[in-house]
Length: 438
Ligand code: ADP
Ligand code: MG
Ligand code: MG
Image (cartoon, rainbow, N blue to C red):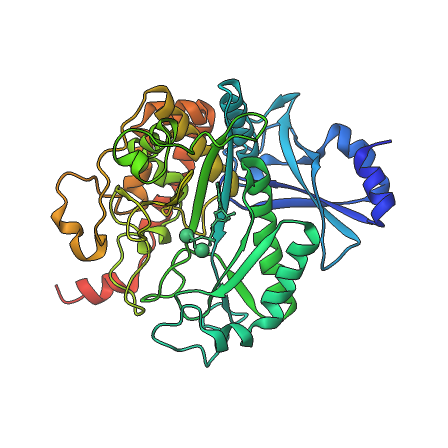
């Protein structure tokens, strides 16, 4: 009996949502009745690739999304439906540019070198009114709203419902808080293998939006939904283990500054790869026009953006691109809420492996407040100022492009250029305000 058919029988599932993620991070699904799931598990559900963000033409043959039975999640808020992550194939071959395939390829490359990457993410979000134009809680107006006890309790019904679901799903959630912007929240659960974290990240976004809608609200992961307020980050915490997952290869003490903060030599090289590829990597971790209003941003109302501007690393200090909060792992603070869950993990592994292979030096550690003293550092590369610069930096990084896949990279660059062109051909109020009387 097919694994998913058995799952349906045991759990009382009536419909499966066979879901894949396109290049722009959109989740696309077909609802398949349990009676048809056994065939779909074998052959996949058919989609027209051109109809989603995949760099295909209407003439392409059917793309088949084959559900991964190890990645099935019964919707806690609608138990008769189960979501299942799928892998895209076309004419018997994996679709190279499909984000979950990109990630699986890199996980395999890491495994071939005896490495197993484990990550945790912090996917911040805002809860807005259904129209998406205002913070939903009119009393959430404090200048420093982070950890606001009263405000988090006014959204208890939404936050606790989501946390209850994560408990039920066995994700190991351990804390929830009001974040640094009015209307902003964060929920944390345990780290795990990169593919599991990517699937959970996808499902988390779906779940947060669904539960918010249920309560008549709108949740958004948009990088900077409200001007002047702190944006939605999606920090990634990273460690690398041996294949059986028992020994943390990042734990240890390399010589010098890397070891002082509790990272091994290999951890230092992996970090070195992230630093080396940072400007190109931003094309993936900060994939939208709006992303660049979060990084390189002026100080927010709360006093700090909490987002980086420069390619620098440090110990337990939140003003740099990379923070080493404690021994055996580091935190990449660059990614934002628009990041594609699969490409985020994939690009981290690609840059990290490149660092290990080339024994990349992460450069000096700066233990300064970057927001106050960043101008004193000479020579540290600045992060791209906009999406176009990031895409160009990615295009100029042959190693990263090859590691993520030549077809994937070509498609991604092409589609992101199209998106940029669409943005710049849009007439804005700003132009009129600044050019009318010229
Ligand atoms: P902070 O706000 O201080 O950055 P959080 O507690 O909000 O930290 O999030 C930390 C994330 O890092 C969680 O997802 C946690 O599971 C994850 N994490 C903790 N230890 C490791 C590790 N060794 N490897 C990867 N991720 C880790
Ligand atoms: Mg956090
Ligand atoms: Mg963090």
